[in-house]
Each structure stands twice: as structure tokens, then as C-alpha cells.
Image 1 (tube, rainbow, N blue to C red):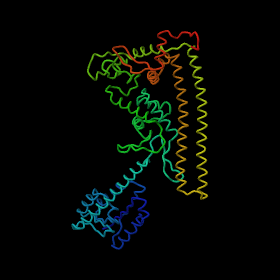
Image 2: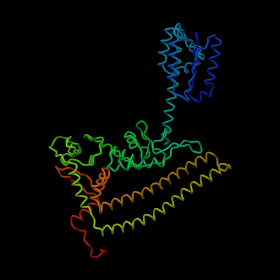
Image 3: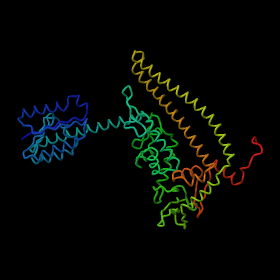
Image 4: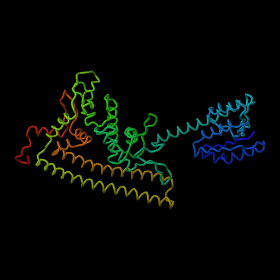
Length: 490
């Protein structure tokens, strides 16, 4: 009979506490030498650096099965070999076939075909205690995770938009990734506008940023509460202490839109048709769905989900023509446009002055906290403050710096949003029809969302409400109110 030596460690702590692989192997070699059992092979498993325990265990079992002679399987202790009864079933079958004798050194226990019930019970009890240890470790990990969550700390990998970092005091932290956070913000803004489906968001990311995200990945981002300030763990929300990327209101708005998309019962919900998901039936309130017919034209019709009512089928070109007539009416005379430009310039001048003032104030505030950290570090080196005081103040000042950075980002975002809105309004004021007709699907949907709300299909006619200030513009145009004023001061 020859021996197979089996050594295993599962944690770094076990290595340091005298259970290292070399220590186990030496002890088992000495045992085999005392018992005059030649060594056939040796297996060492370090679970702290690899996860191949099952694979190595299966190799041991296969070697025992293939051996023409009975094998002595030598292990320091029961929990080094197994921590569940799954292995017991396999090993017990080999024992009964007299293919193996198992030597547990610490327990002074030999399991063989001739083992009595007392020895077999001792073996089972050893496995039970080993399994109990595993479960206890699992419970400790779970308790540790819950405690971290209650402190507002993320126990795992940071989601897209954030990154895991190690601070100067070797403490782990989560901070905003400047580039990725912008992508997350844009995704929420696009989808939250109601003009983008998941597919359109995916296409927009590829077009603008060269990012080929799957729809599943996009969906996970758009439903992760971490971005507004909470960690979702097994159905429970925990407020976290990290910088947020979006506001709770925007998150809730996106969830509402996602829920409405999920309730749609029409075909081709993911295809990029111009008016998909924008128009409801005036008769029953069901969604008007697009469908490509055999003549290659796209037709829109009520899903009639609540019951058939002889709904009309309307070609996409007919709907575009009706919306186009609306945009033809949104035209402001050039002199009125000039007045708007003067007004915008005046508003922007005041806004720019305010922005510069705020930017200067926030920059100075950030520099002040950064200098405090530098000074505090020197105080720590010179012994004027303790390490605990330094760690506490460092955390406070870093949070202040990150808070200031977020305000600076929001200041720039406000600037960008201002220009985008002003540009849309001016384009719509004088080039509304041409802009709408020549736009791609995505831009058409954005323009409609900007100008209209509650569009419905009543028979073959599209009805809608016009949002402010475009309802006023239409009222002026329809009633010929674009007339020269006698006195510009009245």
C-alpha cells in the first residue's frame, strides 16, 4: 500500500498559525516514514490564492480509483480534507470497496473497510464540526456585510461610475469616476426625457462615446439606487455616505418610464420607430403601435388591447405631415427673434457673472481644504496631532473636497444645459419645420417631447396639447398677433 498526501489551507491566517502547507506536508511525510508507507503522490491546495479545491479533490479520487492497489490517503485533520458530507459519500464507497484507507493524524483515526461504527461516527462528527465551522464563517461574513451597510459603506466592488480606492491611511473607499459618472448622468437624462428607449440609449452611447454597452448592462445602471444615495442589498435599501451622481427625482422618473415600457403589449417594442411609445388611442387609451406592412410602409394603429373598436391604420408619413404642420406654425418673425436674442444675451451676461463668482468661491474653498490636509499631515509627522485625530479630520476634509468638486461639476452642467435649451428654442423659433422634417429619429422624438404632451390618435387625426411657451407662440401665430407694437415700453 502506497500513500497519497493531501494538504490544504483555506485562509492567510491558517498559514500564519502553524497550518502552512509545508508544515502539514512535513508532518505527514514523517508519519508515513514511521509507518513504513511509501509515498505515491502529494497534493497541496492553497485556497487563499486559488479556487481549485474541487478539481484537486477529484484528481485525488480519480487516482485512488485507477490504482491497482489499495491507497493510504493521509491527511492532518478531517477539516483539511472535507467540509461537507458530499465527499463522505464518495470516500465511503471507496472504503467499502477496500480501495482506500484514510488516515486522520490529529484525530488519531483510521477509516478502512474494517472500521467499526464508533470510528465511522467519529468521522461523521468531524465532518459535521467542519461544516459547522464553514457555516459560522459564512454567518460572520454576512454580519460583517450588514454592519458595513448600516455604516453606509459599500462591501463590494463599486458600480460603473465609481471606483474603489485606498486612502493614505490604507482605508478602502469609493469615489466618483469623473468620466464614467458623466456617462451615467447622460444615460439617466436621455432615458428620463422619455424620448429614448433602451435601444436608443445603447445606440447613442456608441455614437457619442464609442461605448458598446449591452441593454442588460444599461438596464442595471438605470435601476441602481446607488447613484442617488442608497445601496440595495437583498431587497433592503441602506443610505450610503458616498457622493451621489444623480438626484432622487430623476431616478424615480426613470423607474416610472421603465415601468410604463414594461407594460406595453405591442409588437416591435424595441425597434426605433419615430412615434413608438409616444401616441395613445383617443378612444380607449391604449398605446398606438407601429407595424411594417407588406407594402414596406410603416403603419400606426391602436393595439385594441382593451377590446376591438375598428381602429384606423395611419401611415407614418401621414403622422409626420400632421406634426410638420404644427412646426410650420411655430415661426416667429425675425424682429421678435432679435428681441429674444437681446433678452438672452442680457440674461446670460448676468448668469455668467454669477457663475464666475460661484466658480471662484468654490475653487478657493477646495484649495482651503486641500491646504488643511497638507498642514495636518505635517502636524501628524511632528507629533502635534495623533494618528486617530488625523484620520478623523482627513475623512472630514476629503468629504468637503468631494462635495465641492460635485458643486463645480453641477455648475458646468448648468452652463451646458442653458446653452442646449437656448439653442433648441432659437432653432424652433425660426426653423421649426425644416428642423423637424430633416431630423433623425432621435431628434424628432426630442422635439416632439419638447413641444407636445399627451398626443393621441383620434380616427385619422393626431390630437395633442402644446406645452409652454409654445402654446403662446401658436396663439400669437394663429391670431396674427405678431404685429409691430406702437410703444415698446407698453
